[in-house]
Image (cartoon, rainbow, N blue to C red; front, side, top):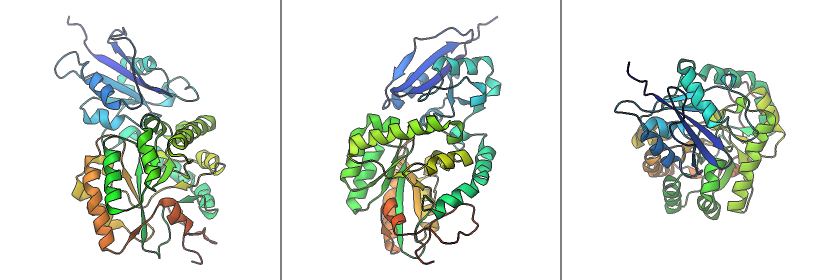
Length: 368
């Protein structure tokens, strides 16, 4: 009988980067625990691709729901990527995932119990209904935060201004390319940075600030927030704030939840923190790489006064976003829009005296 040659890789994250444990079908380590720095996601992907035991036998990679930094690149590389959920795993530390070997064992022992990830679904594949239910359940808290000026998805609808925002970076070379385009057009933007890559690419964060762009926190590891405890969430935000402040000389003024994820508890916790929560009202899904023309076309079709545009400089190959950006800028300028930072867009708006019933709350113009 032929020996089972399958291999299972667990990918953990820590404050210092990533750890990879690879097991064979019998649970024996194939290699010693491998460690990769926070800026070595590409090297991690290449490492796993090189561990295939034979043609057509890629290593099964297992992440958990608090690691939203690697799934896109791993899937794009052709690796089968799976997610282990919190109820399938032991407890996590304050900052970090469960150990890499635990994740590899979860894949080896019961792969059918894990969720395979797709380019479209990302780390939340199969949890869309849960995500949507969280939005519904937290509507009252979101409305209250919006009324207090603490949450927004767009600015004033009567002023021809829009805010470009970029999530998940910094991510060389794409962050630098985006910054160069913004400089060429003299257009401000806002970058919502993830702490782990920001700790590796401080020069990019410093350049964002030096060029006059806004800065926001986007957590340390891009997790699904309802899977965190209050102390774990606070640690993610505090660590990221510190990294950005060291690099940029200023603390980030805003916060954006990964995936827009929230729950009543999450919004209650965020309501006690200083940074307002910024969502968006135009998402061209550039992260799905539909093509530069499609990305630009979606933005130009949907943009309105006060729009907050969600785009991405991090999370994988963002060459299409880079190619789309001049089309977006020129198209919106031709339509008479001005660009501003998200904080400035929202500062020009005021919390409404009476909030409308809406799927997502927003701020409105003073007196409206």
